[in-house]
Length: 348
Image 1: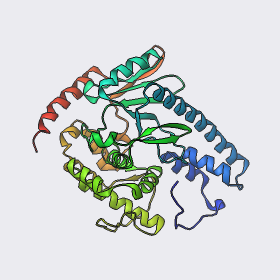
Image 2 (image 1 turned 60 degrees about the vertical axis):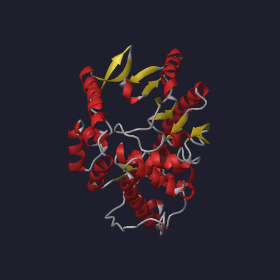
Image 3 (image 1 turned 30 degrees about the horizontal axis):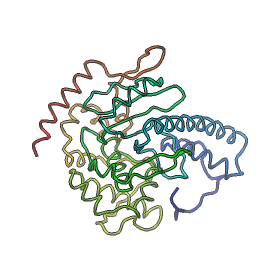
Image 4 (image 1 turned 45 degrees about the vertical axis):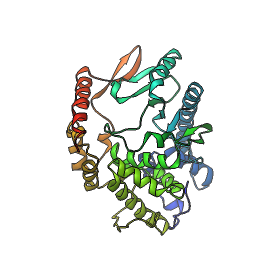
């Protein structure tokens, strides 16, 4: 996925098999690990082979769902930018949904066309979110957006996001994704402001992007959108992990502060101080007032899983299918909060 590490090679017989699968599950690399073990290791016993084959079979079924979703979307919207999905041609990633960008003027026309093809709404987003989420039986959910934003904030120029899209191949399907500078910024912003952690697979992909990025442009964008210090701390953490895994820094021409890792286990959670400073620098305090209970949980426990599964989105059955929908009260509160807090954001 990137390159060989300097860490000593471990004999397969010394590996805790259950712990390996548990860590791979947390890091969303279970399918990749299982298929690699089946292809490359002859020391597996029959029970291990059976377990791994079950994982691979289930993963292969999900990959087919991904392929069908991408094919459906790109056939309907050939110029859609699919982002946060591709992480290298050799890595078969299985995500929960397909994130795509389209022009806002086309967003709801595309939604109508998808409805005509049998897709159904999964989440009823308020209009100010400028996104839809739909799904169809046998396919992964499509999360289609007209802008990249988290916590009602943007993190880079829309013009940069759409500039020079790259054709890539993911799970044997070809589509367009962002240029490397936009891709790098989107991933780092997503790590910091959507879920405060990053996974090994995502980290290795970012490592591979670094030689191609324009660092001055990346830093300039982060400065413009008020999160440069957060970006620099994130890069410093990446630099330190790169030293542990490969013996040298990833990026030399920025300030380096050595960090001590008591243990290095993925996904890596950002330190609590980092999270607080990121919120202050990006000025999303007002937004987070509406998430105060979840934020307290994260700060007290360091566990960010509670942050990624909003309890206000309840599941219910409609026409025999499970749908996620915010209550009318929560929907109204979110809409009013967005309007009120956007007024405060006009003041520096």
